[in-house]
Image 1 (cartoon, one colour):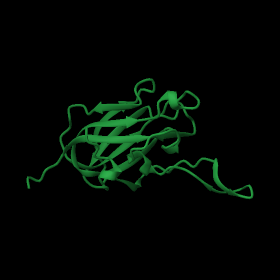
Image 2: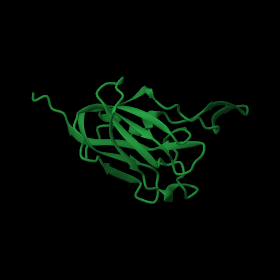
Image 3: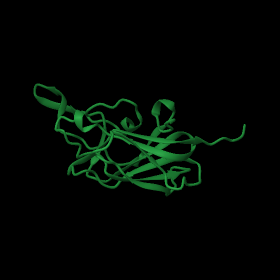
Image 4: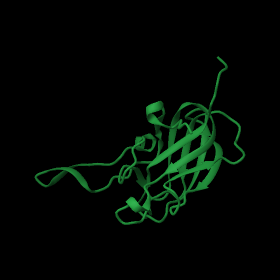
Length: 174
């Protein structure tokens, strides 16, 4: 299925409507033993195709949100959430994976959003999980908001590796 939330196809993160990025304390760059810079992935990571250990957007705690401007106005039918498989996790666990989440559609950035559905990511399932929207709600949306409601037990942060939006593009009839 086509991913309308893919950055290379024209989608983008609405930075004014996303949770604050969690900053880790593992220094990437230091000078004479003094840490100068701490690396963390930006929210844009969620709409990019590379998925490998540590390449995720982390936000503090178990609840957070991100708004994505889609590449085209879309009648949304499915969403996909991807996380690192347990087999690739150094600890063999994926406690930082989102558990319960909801999706909202918006025509404009200032909209409150139309509820499109609530879902549960199964940490014991496949790493890429696609969810059909219940009753395929009416409406064409230019933006979506992913609201993570809980994770699988990590107390400090939640990691989102990839989020995709599927459906049919809106046509003006031209």
